[in-house]
Length: 231
Image 1 (tube, rainbow, N blue to C red):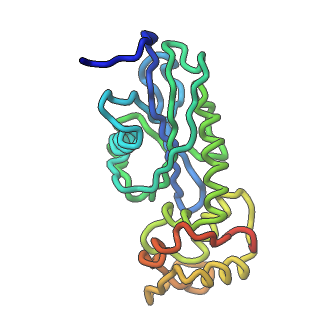
Image 2: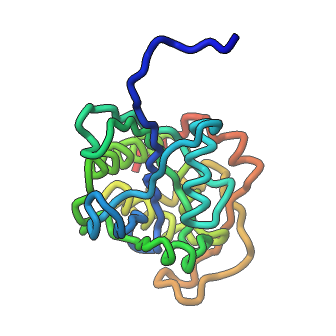
């Protein structure tokens, strides 16, 4: 006998993805220009409805892959948005996720085919429904997590300099950090491996090029490193 709960109201479940990227100067958000109603022509996060036999995280990863072509990126469940009137068409509960990606790794042509564009957080347009609220909540979560854990590296290319890493953290927190203190703190984590290369275009006298020590990174990921407090 197939059991069912005695409840006939229809409630849709959606997932919305807040996708952050870093272009070397600014923290950016991947958003789409909607070509369908409601709110056609306005800016929106990338989202979709959960399939009947799909777990929440699987659905979020599917949506991210459909937009960027990427898999195995940092993604974290953020919050559930369930206000009755949040969607004007039907009652829809949205479970939001935020993701951190390396901009240079994503499939730009695929994103453009979905009408997706990178927007600076500093000049981000208004988003539909409660999507702007989702972004602000995700940014707060990112700032909290990046202060304690080394998740900022997820936004960087494979090779980088300490000045580039500092610029990333300054973009995340919208504030400047002391160069010497930042360098001292980062090097003390032992997360960086010297590649033996120099950045010839650097303003800091051919800055050393590093890569992340992946083994140490995985071991220390959940450790409370406290990146920001001492800068």
